[in-house]
Length: 245
Image (tube, rainbow, N blue to C red; front, side):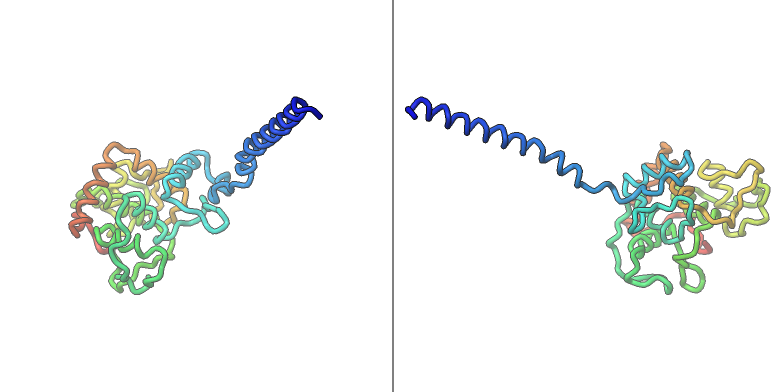
């Protein structure tokens, strides 16, 4: 084989190697994409009502709402009081590393939700009952949700609740009546078609997610959030706090 033939053979080998290398390099991203796991949440979003899906997705994408270890959101399931506290604390962007002690007899220092609970306690959105308990695993009721939402707005509830114009006003707890009236007036919550509020009914996870998401989209929300942040940083509490809730 003369010198020229050798050079041609070497050139073919180099060209073949280059093409093979490019093919391998080009196929790597596709292979990686196939093995990249999808988001662990959203596996049961099809159980949510059509109106709730968009709000749930927003809450998930913003890190406000998390699923369980199997990626389930359980949209129609009950939301516990502690889960609601976590959602609201995340929504407000409050610091959760202020304390490692618990103000509540029934919430241990190793509870996953303690940082969120103590953050809302610090600013006066949450307080325990007369026994120093919080009942973290109890379902959140609609009247309790009303209290949480109105406290975020820092609306003055003095004098409200005495003329609560809903079908089931007598079913609302006395301590919650001012907040239920304020929540209805602010458009944070609403009655059903019959004019009933169902204050003692348990709020579903999708209902709370939709309600909180809609609240964040109101033009006033950033103002609420900023004021609460200032109060939190100064160690002050909101003005319409009511220890009964």
